[in-house]
Amino acid sequence: MKRMLLILGVFGWLVTGCGQAEQSQDRPSTQTERRSAGQAAIVDDGSDPNIVQIAAGSENHTTLVAALEHANYVDPLANPGPFTVFAPTNAAFEALPDGVLDDLLKPENEDQLKDILEYHVLIGVYTTESMFDGQIVGTANGPPVSIEKRGDGTVLVNGHHIVASIRGANGVIHVIESVLLP
Image 1 (spheres, one colour):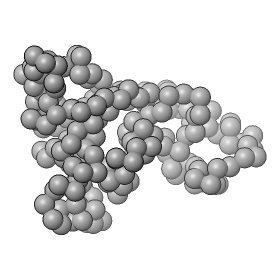
Image 2 (image 1 turned 120 degrees about the horizontal axis):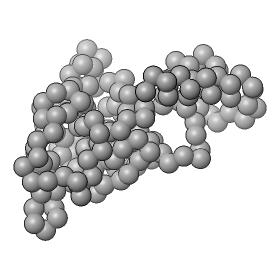
Image 3 (image 1 turned 90 degrees about the vertical axis):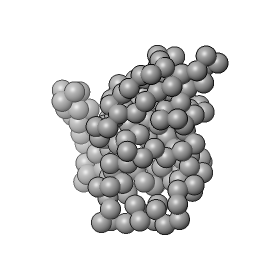
Image 4 (image 1 turned 180 degrees about the vertical axis):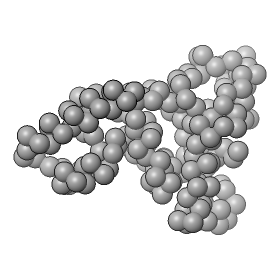
């Protein structure tokens, strides 16, 4: 993994050092900004999008993306992975008790927000086809989630339905309509 990051870093340095003339407004504009933005700032229009790019392109996941940004968790999920992410919709965040999301987005609660977000991440790719009833899987922050797979093909994580799955370059996103709490 370190070797891959080194290769990507050298490639990025060569590309930026050779002075690409065209800069998008949403891309970091200076070499220093690109370096500090990390893995998420690497632009590769030829490959499939990673998990963060998929979520950022979804109008139903703007709250999740904002939470990832507040917790400084964008870069880790933009890395090669592989990851499985249970991605709560905006409606899932809105269903939290009043004030909970606002409190989590305060700078002093960054660690707590990151813990909750990491509870939505599995290391490895777990497709709904590969999941099985009664499966217990550890999350990125430690505590496990439980999988229930019903005879009709319905898959639940901690009792919450997976309503859609999207494959990305570095893993899979399972859309859920609830926020999982450790």
